[in-house]
Image (cartoon, rainbow, N blue to C red; front, side, top):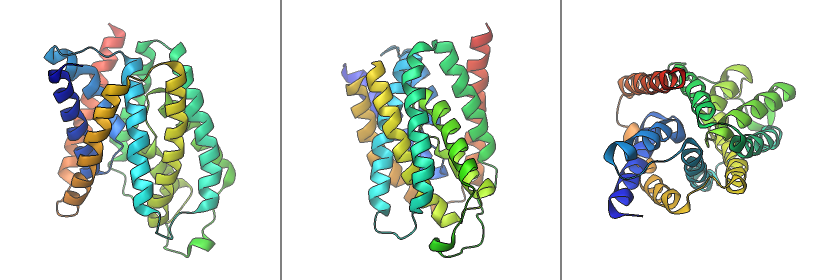
Length: 259
């Protein structure tokens, strides 16, 4: 790996993770197009859709692991919810991640387009949970939880994402989980999802380990910085701008698929 590629990957990981921490959206949705288009534009490398999804998967694994450690002392994780959704999502993410090897790059890009469009819309949905009731009194529909987690796991596993940007609105708006419980529990669920995605991508041979390591180091440094700065800024405009950029990327990929 050349010095120029190393610097490029670090900057992609740093900028993508900083933005994701700043506006509260999954990092893979941001980093996927950056990895796909920036290295070839600079003439330092060309990554396939399979390789990009593999790099994203292992980066998400370490990012969510660090988040789980940060919340491990909080009494906000709904264990039963994590078990139901976690089992479903790890099965789905493994199937999606490993099954992605049988899909064309165009198909993987198309799935990214769909997920990116959903993510852009989700950024404008008010993240207000139900009444803040005690953790031991929080209830939810088991079937909806399992089926939604399975679908999210399959689709996000294909592109190497953990699916938090879709899980959080589902938990808040459909399952009616309180906001603080949703944030803590979704992090645990997406960590479980990232295990399935990472194992699936490793078995599929889609992970380039050195680029992934560089991205992991950059994300560990940048994500907390973005999250800390977000508490001091009004991020509404930034979310709107990011949504436009994500949709622009989705349209670009869509046009490439059709051409």
